[in-house]
Length: 352
Ligand SMILES: Cc1cc2nc3c(=O)[nH]c(=O)nc-3n(C[C@H](O)[C@H](O)[C@H](O)COP(=O)(O)O)c2cc1C
Image (cartoon, rainbow, N blue to C red; front, side, top):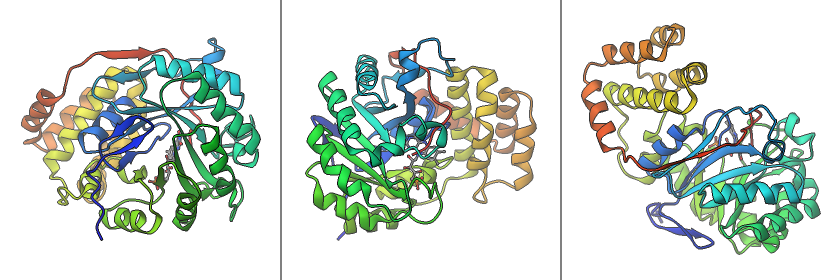
C-alpha cells in the first residue's frame, strides 16, 4: 500500500504538513536551502548544528548567523553540546529566536565534536544523553526532538537502548540515521534498525539515510512504520527530488528551471552570507545543480572559476535564456516576511 506523504503528523503540538523532512546538513542548510525545501514540499526543515558552547562563550569566532524567515515554519533548530545546563540555555535562545522545534544532535561523527563528549558519543552515555534531553525539555515550551546514529561502532545497537530513555526524558520525536559514527557515510543505512526503534517508542520516528526517490521513501515508510522520511544528500542541488518523493511532478527539471533555481539560490545566499563567504560556500552547489547530465561538465568548471557571483548569474542566464523570465516569476512568488536575525555562532564541523 502506498503511503500518502502529503498528510500531516505532529511533533508534540507542532503540526508538520507533510511526511518529508529536509535534513540538517552543516555547510549546506542555510536559509536559502531551507526556504527552497519548504517551497518544494518539505513539511519540516532544519538548521545545521549550532554549537551551544558557542552560545555560552560569546567570544567564539562567529561563523555566521542563523536567520529564521517568516516562510520557513515549521523549522527545527539543531543544537549540539555535552552539558545539560548549557544545552538548556541554548534551547531557550533557539525558542526565543522563533524555532518551532529544538533538535538535539546525538549523531555527529566528526572527531572535533565527539572528543568534546557531544554528538554521537552521547549514544554510549545514555544517562548523560537523557539528562541533556530532560534539561532542554524543562527549559522550553516548544517540543524537543533528537537526531541519532545507530551508535559509535559498526553493528552497534545503542540507539535502541538509548531511544526509549530519551522519550522518557521528554523527547517528542526521534530521528534515526542508522549508520554507525565509524561508518561516516559509507555502506548503507540499515533501516531494519529504524523499524526496531519504531517498535520500542511511542513518539514519532523519522527515518534518515539513503532516501533519494519516491520508491525508496515508500519502501522505508512501509517497512519501518516511521512517521516521516528525511532527505539529505538527495536534495543537494536537487529540490525536484522532494517533489518526486512526495508523488507530485516526477519529471526532471528543464535547463531553464535549473538555472533559475540556482540563480535564486545564489542571490539569497549572498544576501545571507555576504559576497565573500557566499562565493566560496556556493562552489559545491554548482556541481550539484549542474551535474546529473543537466549541463556539460566543463560548464561547471567555468562557473567555479568566475570571480564574482554576479558573473556566475550572468553566465547561467546566458546559458539558459528562458531562465530569466522563470526567475522573475519565482522571485515575485516569494513571500517577503519578517526575518529574525539570530546572533549565533554556527559550527563548521557538521555531521550526523
Ligand atoms: C554535508 C553533510 C552535513 C551534515 N550535517 C549534519 C548536521 O549538522 N546535523 C545532523 O544531525 N546531521 C547532519 N548530517 C547528516 C544528515 O542529516 C543525514 O542524516 C545523512 O546525510 C543521511 O541522510 P541522506 O542519505 O539522505 O543524506 C549531514 C550530512 C551531510 C552529508
